[in-house]
Image (cartoon, rainbow, N blue to C red; front, side, top):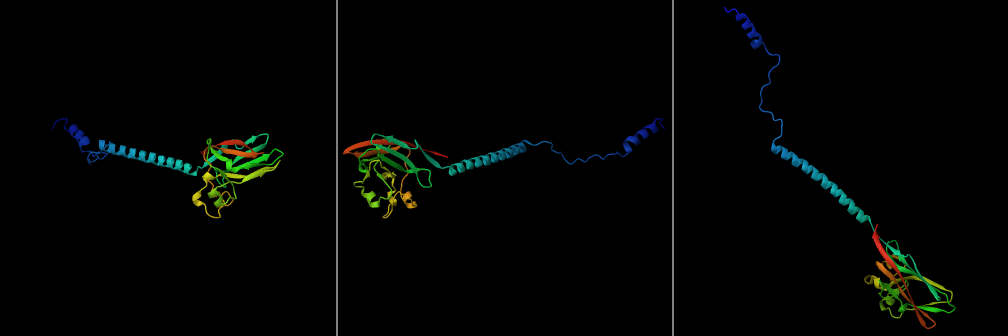
Length: 233
């Protein structure tokens, strides 16, 4: 027997025959710890698609808000100055655009004239004109005129103003009447819905009147204008 056989055997038994405290894990194939290039591309596409969807939804909401704001806004008309007045030795006259009932646009004028003389004079409506940007655009009508009077538009009556008297009323350009809706019995400019609907919108621009007053056989002219503009609000 070799002198060292016992030591070798003991050493062999201790390291080779003794059961290990921990069981070695069996190999079940190679486990992937990182993504392949294809998987990385797929994940990038998914992230890009999610970002695209988020941006698209945000843009959709933004456009919806813009459209909603545009639909809810209305066009509001204003005039500068609000009232136009003229004064002479013979008369004072006033012209003021009037808003349509329940609307934000103008469709008529308030007109007033005061006789400052000691004699009566007349306003010659047949020789007075609606002005738009400095050009004559027809004559004026007023509430109470019948459809026949508007259609024929022959000699318009004159308005007699006594000394010291002020005559006031509402006038509107006949040119802008909705003639398709004119019916027998309709009274444009009247307070009812039908009468108001017949009046057209006073357009943007310089609106006014070229007024003629017959004074002691002499025709005296006076021009009054205002600037009408509009904006969405």
